[in-house]
Image (spheres, protein in one colour):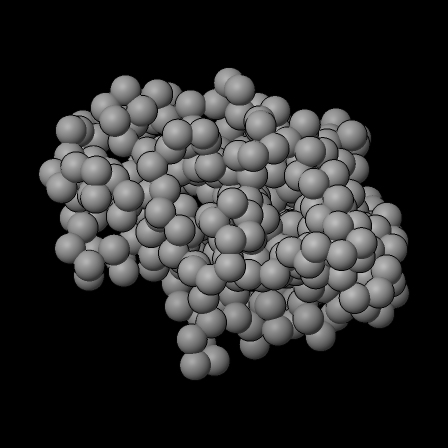
Length: 389
Ligand SMILES: Cc1ncc(COP(=O)(O)O)c(C=O)c1O
């Protein structure tokens, strides 16, 4: 990455922490070692996975046996949904309803749609204009036939936190399995699995300064779960395939640092977000942009800022930002070169014009206030140029 690049796209992926890289290199340089092999090298690799699992379990306050290492957030979400839905229906054929929200990541939404094709009934909860689902709506939707409820902890486009505790209590009371996609919340929010009424929880390493292609799925002891990935008996038969030993070591080192530094990191990204917002107000005037998602800090993660620059297409803005050395994102799926309006902003009931002008800035390690101030100036220059055209 060029030193001049201003990287405000940490919700897409984060730079690996040097200590995570060191943990990766240390584990990867041990010579060939398959953790399933019985010889000394294999046992050493197995030992690394056991140590990593123990550390992650300590951070999340769960039993190490409840954690399965996966190939990332998408795999964790898919394994959770297919695994719980199929196990629930096998136990009780009446349980065929899947309840989720309109603002989930596609890793959840598309897995739910696949379950619908396989005979499950899908119920998608709406959200308010801050992107938040209502506990009342969830209460009405979850019943005796519900197999799985899947609600994300924090949204990846606007950062809004969901009432997963209240919904989880309702789900579990009614015999449904509660799944939480905590990919964007992990690192910034406290996830205490002793307290959380949750059966399954998905994590991804590369959102917390770990490597890409590694993640974890928490499966509470006794929760209905059927493995979808079949093969060897790794991960107690819940996820077949040779483990990514170095990736797991690096993930857990990154997770440890995120847990230790949580408060400093929250303060750091908060300052960045505020500096960009203040800069935009100063440079553009407060009427020229609108913040999307929950405004109060208790209702959102601190590292995401989604803003619509009214009257300016996000595609053009992103291209111009890129040319000026600022990496941000539209938080939208890019199909055949054109940005589709985001399903999250659309579900929030925002006007098409506001959806089409929305940019997500997401902050993290390595960013500084000067970058936020510079970005506000760059945006003002771009906006002036585009408006004068
Ligand atoms: C909320 C959420 N869930 C799941 C994922 C998928 O994670 P991964 O990229 O590790 O597959 C992401 C990544 O963007 C995400 O933000």
